Image (cartoon, rainbow over all chains, first blue to last red; front, side):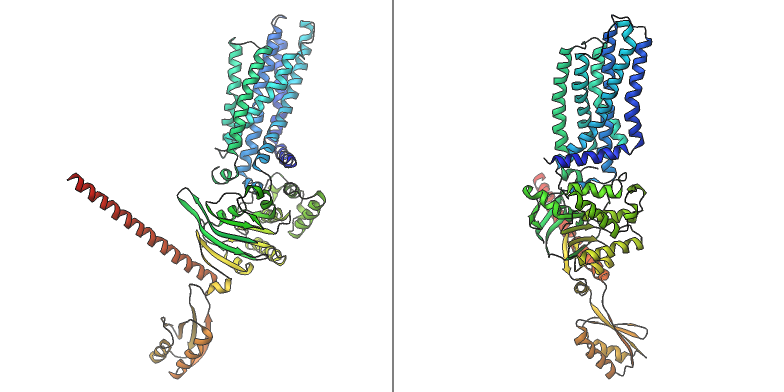
Length: 240
Length: 336
């Protein structure tokens, strides 16, 4: 694995993504907007001090699920965008290996959205602390539950969205279609949301650990499938 | 520099390239001519290590095509200009060349120097920082040439480099190809622009799944299409036509005061022809030789190839229908 090639490809993809205004706006506005919205709901919902921790945990979790669309969007642009511009052939003609190209693209699709999600989560936690400090009498964030959500669950969900988008990209030839189908990657997140709301499980460190384990298995499977899909010959002869 | 031995590629039941055998010497510009679907792009993709082969072997710049051990080295020796420009529209010209230069492991200083040289030579230096999105089709095509050359490869594969360009754009690209030829690079050029092949290529091959003919453009003109001599006379009489017919085995045609006589070897046949016509009382005004163009040769060779394929298909269909009627007959017998 030539890491210089991986970095070169990731940098190129990031440059191209950031050249698109719609992506720039999406990356900046969605996390900030959601953080402000959620913190205002917490501030004005009249939640009692006893119930606040449960709501705060849930809102942080929902925030992560909603912003999970960002990596899928980026991956769709990265993969299907190359298909639309017919730029994969000259890229594949370089000495970079299939794995280096895929990894470079995955890194580009992962890093920027994940940074935006983290920034949004930190903002949400800070705003929530600001509006709940008087009620609770202490700063609820940071805590271990939030740390696991931010640094383990969020990257694993983002990785799942990227790997799933690579698989989708092999089958479609329009960025919009890839994004819509990529939304299917949100299904596990929605399942968790429903489970949480229905009381099937509670948000604690043990359930987050189980969740991380399950996501790791799903991510590994999807990553292997994505690697098997991203094969030079198939890209040129079978990808539409 | 490029050795191809019995190279074939099938996609399912469809044969895209059938038993291609060819050697292209170092510094040679070889043109692969053929209609769409003739297997030219598939050939280039196989040689560039982008897709696999079904059978046969090939070596490019000493690397065996399809060998995973030398795959990176092989691609490093090749500059590819695919049929579709495939440029990143949101990158600038300079950034595009820098990106590819990095992937080809070109050192930073060399990258910068080559980027300036190539963009200057191709008339793009003034627009080096403009996004490719703002480029005309001709500018994009020139940038793809620069991209193929950023790592200074000894071998170039150019797939339809002047396709869809206006005459001025095509000329710019063609002039640059002639410059590359002077630099003694080995070039495999896919084209169906026959004039381009005649001007640029040392040798051309006519391909229609398989290689039908190979030779220099001049040499190929004599293949498949006969040369002829046209003689304009003051008056054409039956005696003159009869005299002309004695010198040629093929048909003599008459149009106005000009008779056209097919000849095998003009230097041998023309004096005999002229003597015969003069002896028959002909008053010769002009004598001119008609050499078939590469286009005529190309169309004639492809025409005979298509006829052959049609005959084969018909034979196959007849055989299949005979076989099926025999089977039906057998079934009938069994049924009875």
